[in-house]
Structure formats: C-alpha cells, structure tokens
Amino acid sequence: MSSTEDDAPGSILSESSAFNSACGSDSVKAHSTKIQEECKTEVPQRENLQWEFSGLTIWVELEEFGNDLTKAIQDMAEIHGTEVIPQGHMTAIYGMDHLCVEEAKKRLRSVPNKIRAWPKFKKPVGVVQDVAVAGNPGQVCSIAWAQLTLSSDPAHEEAMDLLYDIFYGPSSEKKASRDRPWTPHYSIGYDNPEGTPMTLGATLEVISKLPTLTTCERHAKALSLWSTEGKMGDWECLDRINFF
Image (cartoon, rainbow, N blue to C red; front, side):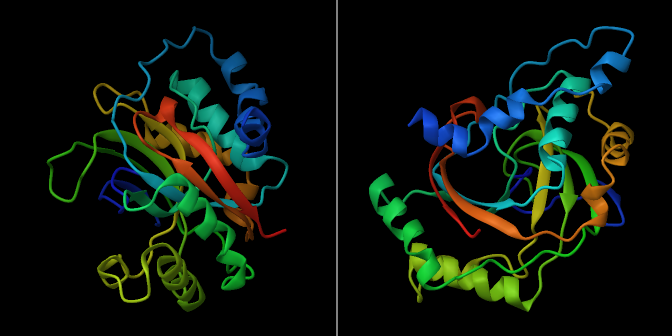
C-alpha cells in the first residue's frame, strides 16, 4: 500500500497465532541487520503510523531471494526509527467493505479455480520515496513511504480483472473503474509525513546492500486477505492461498 492506492508524484529513480506466523510477521521481526550497528548515534523512535486505513484488502506476496524483501523492510525501519510493515506486499484490491470476513475468505479460496498462478513480475523499473497528505490533489491518505516500482503487462491486467470478478462480480462498477493499467509497487517503508526522516538517499542505500531487489524477476508466491481496518498496528492477516 502506498500513499494512495495509486502512485503519487515524488522522488522517482527511473521509475489464529500460527496463521499470522505463516503470513510472515514473525520473519520480519526476527531479521537482524548490521545497518543499525553502523550508526554512531541511537536512532530516535518515530511515532507509529497514525493514518486510519479501512476495509478488507487483497495483497500479492512475492518470492524472496535470501530474504531480501523482508530485510529491506526491517532495515528501513531500523535506520529511520519507524514502525515495521507487518508483511511485504503489493496491493491488488484495497478497502473492501461489501463482504463479511467469512465470505471474503470463501472467495479468496476460490481464486485457484480461475487463476492457477499469478503472472511473473519483471525486475523493478524504479524506486520511489515520497510524502502524501490527505486532501492534496490525487492523495487520499497522509503517509511517507518508500517503494520498489514494478510494471504490469497484459497477463497481469487479465489476472486483476479475474480477481475483481471474484470479489466484486463480472459486471461491477468497481471492476469497470479500477485503475488501468495496474501500478504494482512493493512498499519497504512507511512513516507519518510530518518531519519524516525518510529520504530517497537512505532508501537507495538500503536497496544497494541488497542487489537482488533490483536484479531479479519474481513469482507471486501467495495472495493474502487482510483486515486493514484502523492503523497499521491493527492490521490482521485473515487467510492466504499459496501458488507454490
């Protein structure tokens, strides 16, 4: 999830407990990095992200190489003193409010009947670090963030349409009005916008220490259903399906 669930203009370079563990939150928290040790002064801890999100959300989760995506998320939080994103992801559908949890789970579990595997993603095409403030043109939430920007292709657009068919219906206005093309992006850091220490330079430094972030194509390993109601600390993984 980024500042909107659309891209906003900014600093652009090229362009159940057991279940929660399975969704990856434990692996994120367990990661230990040397970046913090390299800092000579203690990093002040920022206030947890205050923006109130909403609804039920579908995330695309990607395969990792040497836990690189998880490490990037952890490193961004450590060097900036920010809250850790609970699970690396790219948002496919955000903020559904027309389904109860059980119905949303049922529909998620039906996905493999129509989508056997999510199309593969090419290498990222850019890096973005930006700040958004709700009310500004094109911005619907207040957040600072950093992301890897990926690209969509006809196979991804077809998969997105099928996903909207499953969760909204083939003739739904939501499907007709969804953003086209999809703009997949993998957020590695979130913060409150006011006085954020997050910079493009620091983001690039983190990424440079993990070269596979920008040099590898990736398969989607899973789709997960999350309650994104409330602040980021309130988010909860409800269900997931694995592609492999």
